[in-house]
Image 1: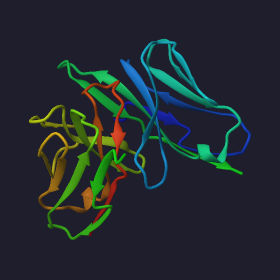
Image 2: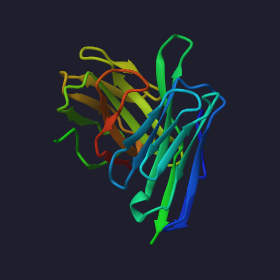
Image 3: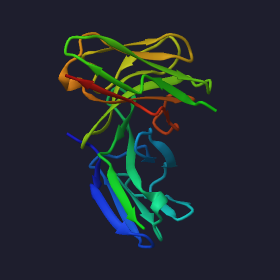
Image 4: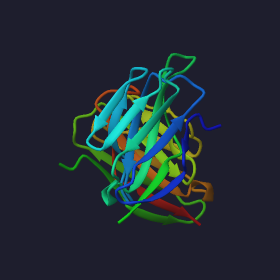
Length: 114
Length: 114
């Protein structure tokens, strides 16, 4: 069972368009991270959000953590070819044993067409 | 700034063969991790080492062993490779354990088991 579902799985849009990708779960997370991964490389952290309702901006990227800390979104304004990549969300869970566990979503593969 | 270095980059094994994936970080991080990435499955944690001298199982540990050789190095061993272990393997490190810590990833090892 995948705790974190990302949608859409694939997205291909023209340069200059806006887009939103989503990360959803039925579980409450203590924190949520977004990573971007380019072909042949490991993921690179973009942002960490920890408070319900928190909004963070990174240039043309806007990240929001849901009020109930069960979901998150990534909005990109005026997409550029350099935004192409696999976007992964990762949520922090506290297990029944008190251990923290980071769970990755399935990813959204974004392609920006010049 | 090397960051996290993984070797080898590519490997092909026959079923039943063994091999060790090497990982080293030069950021003086305390925690290190091994993940595997499969299409549609996201990143799944195999083993982790919260600090030098400790190792713990992750989500998918069966068929793998690890060694935290020192603070810098964390190796992953496949004793008897199986086709189900065909995947891309990533080593990662963080300054401290914790789900809101920034993970730094290596560039991955693409492993095929025939």
